[in-house]
Figure (cartoon, rainbow, N blue to C red):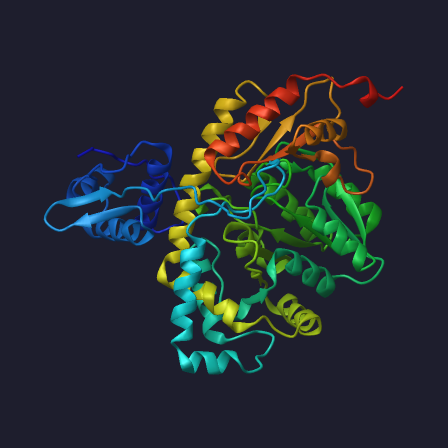
Length: 460
């Protein structure tokens, strides 16, 4: 038995969830190893200054997530990890992929199979799902999503949520509901390419803003508001894509004050994976009247599961409903039911706990293989941001790596309009199908970094 004791930081999460999260993080970091016995509940309760009931709930939550196993009369032990990572049979072994940002293959297939069998046995539910539904979807499904979000520091009601076909669909719907042809949309100067594409399709002007290591610069936002009279600003503030910086609370409050002054709406994109304990308060929590919150299960669960959601209040939600109805009428309730069952049964929490451990293991590989290189990332994030040596330009380096069998993405791919792109590349840690494959890809990347541009790659 180990006298393990977590350090609980100030948080709005329930204490029992904080302890369960701490167990997951300790397992991921190696502080708690498979087979180790957790402290007796009363002893840990006394050490943390909480009730024994809180620790009982914490251990039960950890067991529900699959992190621990309780043995009657013996205690609670860290569970043996499943063999993994899981192998994707469709993986192309001819190239090393550090370009695709998607959830690694894990227990998703088993969870899908189980949920499909459960739904197949519920004839009444199937009959309901086969009928036309309003654009808001089934009420019990919206309530289940709202309950899950409210337990994750994003308190909302069932009337505030709408389902979408993933995050990109959510972006398009949000722009359709808030903008008209010719309007200006602001975003980070380096941003998810989907925002530029959505603006182009809706004949909107997309303008990128200057950033620092905390996100969009307040003065850049003020200047753009005065010059362009924009309608909305699109931000990826939890894990900025592609730079991997996280916007602190102080910067969010500065931007909210500016948005209020200029009546600017915020599209808060939170599709990138990050454990809830690592997140900063969302724009929706801080300024719900100004914000449309956008997220998706496709990124953190499976790309083929095209399901996302929007959270908005009052008039914004009413406008989003109209856009959803015009776009596709509604989202298939069978697909929504799959996810809602995982939310209510704890299976989604198990998937997130597995993904947290998996990404921490992959970050350890990154830190070992690229030690000393200028990297920006966040613990558990899918991506890392690498500044290239001075003799390399990013677009040339990507082509050089491609010739060696390595897929990468240059900063230029994320530059909005003519925003000046730095000489950086984004590295995806989640694309390789195994830890060994990731290690080999990073070793090849290091070899490429040590190369010099060939003469035919130089501009004369």
